[in-house]
Image (cartoon, rainbow, N blue to C red; front, side, top):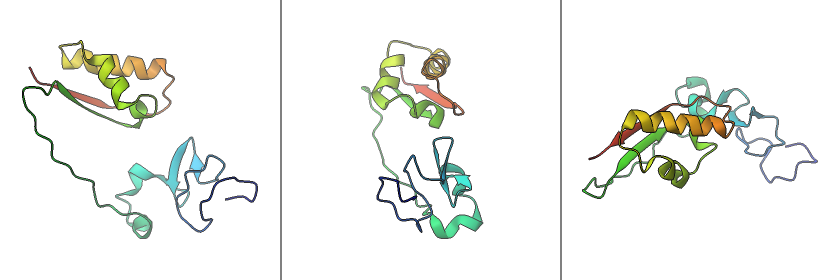
Amino acid sequence: CPSACPCTCEPSFPLCYCPNHPLISGNVPRVDGELAMTRAFGDGRLKDHIIAEPDVSTETIDEDTEFITVASDGLWKVMSNQEATDCIRELNDPQEASKELIKEALSRRSQDDISRIVVMFH
């Protein structure tokens, strides 16, 4: 990082989350100043700098499970898990819920692509 930068990241480290660091473009962390982290996983040239081991968890879907929401950065950069849950909890149609999440993310001035999937359990 530049000498005036208050962060503690290493200049030789390929990914830095400091907002003052030149490897951040459009508020998106980049690997080697090139690809956004989420897109870098499949790029062979950047394999030395990232670990593509997924975090995996198993959850039980039971009668108390209301829905599952899977979304891209465009939603999660502007909403927490709880805020997304609260936004759609009273809705019964997954398509309506998806549209509502997009509407809310846009109202919060999301600047990123917004993809989402809502699966509801009745």
